[in-house]
Image (tube, rainbow, N blue to C red; front, side, top):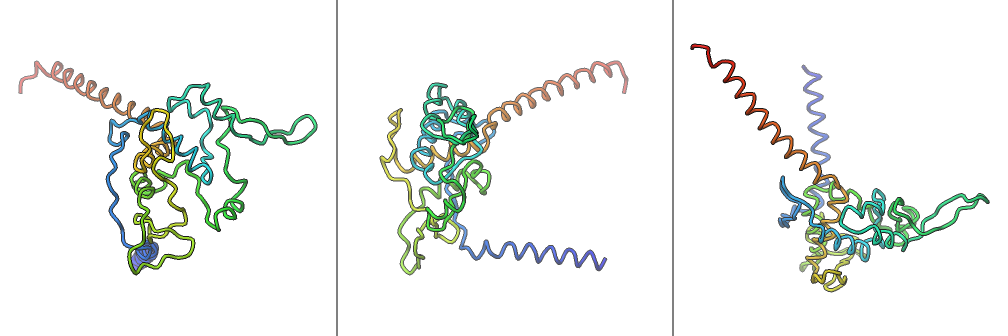
Length: 256
C-alpha cells in the first residue's frame, strides 16, 4: 500500500511539473469559434475553400513551411484536374538518380513526388529564419488542441503589443500564441493573393481557406470515415429493428 501511495504521489508531481511550463507561458485566451464546413458529424470539406487554401499555402506559406507527407497527386482529391496538378508539380525541381553515370540530377517533379521541401535540412531552415525552425505543416492541425480554430486565430491574431508589454528582439505580438510572442511575422495582408474564383482575399478569408487546406491534409480520409459511420449506424438501426421483429414473432404465442 505504501508503494502504491508513493507511486501515485510521484505521478501527481510529474503531472504538476508538466503543467507548470504551460501556465508560465501566459494566460489562456479563448479561441473564437470559426465554424468550418468540416465541423460536426456531417461536415465536409468545401472544395473551393480547399483550392484557395492550397493557393495561399503555395504562394505564402511554402517559402518556409514544408508538407513532407503530401504528394502532388494528392491534390487531385481537392478537385484539381490531372493537367492542373501536373503543371503545378512541373514548377518544382526535385533531385533524382543516380543516372547511368552514377550521378544525381534534377528533374521536374511528377505526380508521385512528395511536396518539395523549402530547405535542404533543419540547419538551413534555422539559418534562413534567424534561428527559428518553421515546422512542417502536414499534420499541424492534429498536433494542436482545437487545431483548426487555433491556426485560424493565430493567423488573424497579430496586433501591436499593449502598453507596458516588453517584446523581445525579432519577435511579434500575437494574442493567441502562448506567451504572446512568436517568431513568425504576420504573413497575410489584404489582397495578397488573387483567387481564380474572384473571392475577395481578406485576411480572414485567406486564413480560413489555408486552415481548411491544412485540416484536409492532416486528415484526408475524414469524409470517407464519416460516410462509413453513417452507413454503420443505419445498418445497426435496421438490424435492431429486424431483431426486435423476430423476437416478437418467436415469442408471440407464449402466454405470460
